[in-house]
Length: 203
Image 1 (cartoon, rainbow, N blue to C red):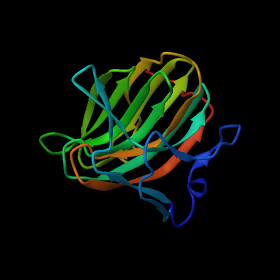
Image 2: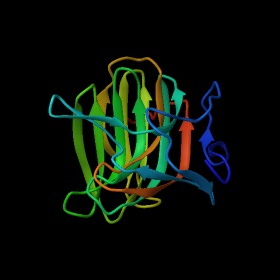
Image 3: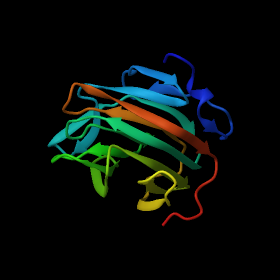
Image 4: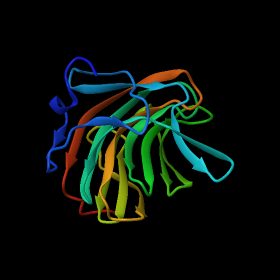
């Protein structure tokens, strides 16, 4: 990472303090500048599983370990032009993973999409977006996890989905950018915030 550090721009109040680091795959080009984190998605980077039909685990992410209760949010902007170019929030443990992202749709345009794998993928298509940006939020309390989004700056948070995590053990949480079918793209993350409390409203 160049030009500053993630710790200088993220509001992280979870204890104990833990370092943010790359895990689950190769480190991507990144930089911190003007109060934002920029990540470069590498070609063919993705995390997906569908039985014997398709499986790929080639998605590096910038994460830290969080406890069994937390809320993590960021405003995400994706500069991609190919189907499934995306960036967003990741939660991952040895038993499951969850991606909540701003993603390029197959026929163009953008949407908020989530994929929960335990281990096979359960996809959920959220609302369409006017462009490649939205605020995203993951919150966890024990085994219950919920995802929220905000399509417009200053707008209300909107419920996306809730799910039951396989266990209550700590998981890694952080940010990622993927490019399954393209040569790569840049994504930008602002207003990164991690707190040790679950959102009271999970639905």
